[in-house]
Amino acid sequence: MHKKVRRETWAFYLCISPWLIGFLLFVVGPMIASFYISFTRWNLIEEARWVGMANFERLFLRDAKFWQSLRVTLLFTLLYVPTELVGGLGLALLMNQKIRGIKIVRTIYYLPSVLAGVAYVVVWMWMLNPEGGLVNGALAVFGIQGPRWLTDPDTALYAIWLMSIWGLGRTAIIYLAGLQGVPPALYEAASLDGARAGRLFWNITVPLITPTIFFNLILSIISTFQTFTSAYVSTNGGPLDSTLFYVLYIYQQAFGSFRMGYSSAMAWILFVIILVLTLIVVRSSSRWVYYEGEAT
Amino acid sequence: MTAIDLSTDKQPQSVEKQRRPLTIQEWLITGIVWAVAVLFLIPVVWMVLSSLKPDYQIFAMPPIIFPQPPRWANYREALTYVPFGRYTVNTAIISLFTIIGHIVSCTVVAYGFARLRAPGRDTLFVVVLATMMLPYPVTMVPLYVLFNEIGWVNTFLPLVVPAFFGNAFYIFLLRQFFLNIPRNIEDAARIDGASVVEIIRYIIFPLSLPAMATVGILTFQFAWNDFLAPLIYLHDQQLYTVSLGLSFFRSSFQVSWAYLMAASLVTMLPVLIVFFVAQNYFIEGISLSRVQ
Image 1 (cartoon, chains in turn blue, yellow):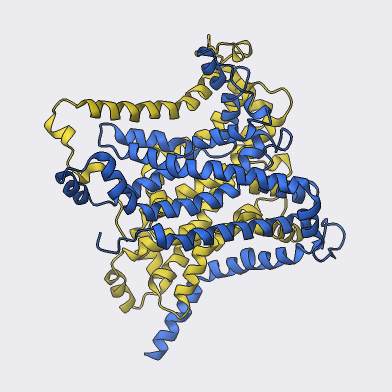
Image 2: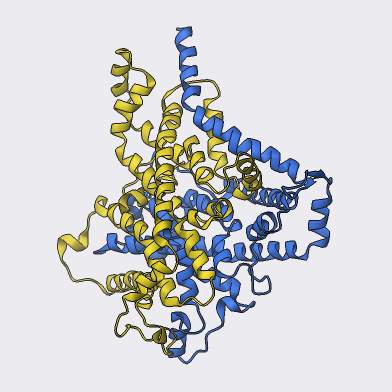
């Protein structure tokens, strides 16, 4: 018997060895390296030079662009995470209606999410173009002079927010799965008791999908903090650094100026911020996330 | 784990069965649902219409909705302006190998986590899940340094090789699927002396084709749309992916929006086609990610 257990252990580690090797090679190793590099000055050509806390000192004390990128990213997160949570749920409620053609509707809502990438952003740059763009064209019909969107430092971040909304279908699909996990019997029982739609939503639907809300909240924070492609393609951080997202600034430092130490220090600050925020959400979850157990 | 059924068939479809007239509330809901659907389609329709406009109609204010006459030459001109054919082939090669890598590696790893008992297994699985939370920038610089050292920068290898070492999300997804396959099917094979590789190859794999399709299709979508990794590793224009090509095309001076829309549409087309053919796999794959 003992021999069989040992053989199974061996087989297990053999099976997971691709992941384990990849984990050590592409995650653990680079993390250790990145931590070390963040205390050096290194441009890939000369030898890396140990500079202690100098990178962090410079970031916090002397780099206005660092604070700007942090400000942009935080502002965008405060704007987009609630949009994703509420808008995604709203969209999921629409997707969950029992009406004819609802499968086609779901396909349409989800469609932009599969297009996420450069083409998606380019289409929206054209949609929001002050001259000839559809958005301002539509506003003009109502006699409204539309803003200059991506080319105005006051509106550029909101323009990126607006274009991101088109991709809410992805969040909505995850919500939809949550909504469909709510047992219909609960609604029926409550309806018989005379509860109105609004109360059904707040007292049954919302509590039962709190695990999905929790999951989406964490996913949304992590991905929003790493916004890159939309800013790189549409504005490259401008105008006047108004869309200088944090990861975009890391990219510019690493692959534009070849400051490997500096950008690694920035990456670790990002990691700590995301980790702390995630932990806060996880710790708070015992107060507001309702776990139904296996019964339903 | 709760089973996810995306069809609406579970609950009685009163509208369908009784054929009673819709109430005002139902009309209203139907109206809102479709109005939002139209809003979601507008950018795509606008892209198609713009791609066919001659230059002088592009900036017309108020916008001209329908190009008159449609200028099909935009497509030919946009696609020869930059070698999008080359980019498409490059992206297809990267996608194909990434798909193979993910399916092979994730299947084996997920099988281990789903079926084989060993000390440390559950801890390791938590580690797998935790890696999904790791921000890409943390490993971005050292990975570049690593691939640079071994001379892989400016090749497809940094984009493709890591796929053969598994992916946390797909490992998780496949493990969930394998857990639902009855164990006794393999037991008979195991008694007959089949090895783990044989069990995966001849029993698990054929039974998991829908899950494999999900992994393959989602991988295709991400590989096709990926931007940051190709941007970092591919510098030679001959090696560009469609995303890089389009970004390059956009930043080149004085490109007409009609050309850009034509090129955008063409780069989107493969993902669009796969999506329409296999949309259930997309939607189920994403939904599965919720189950924890």
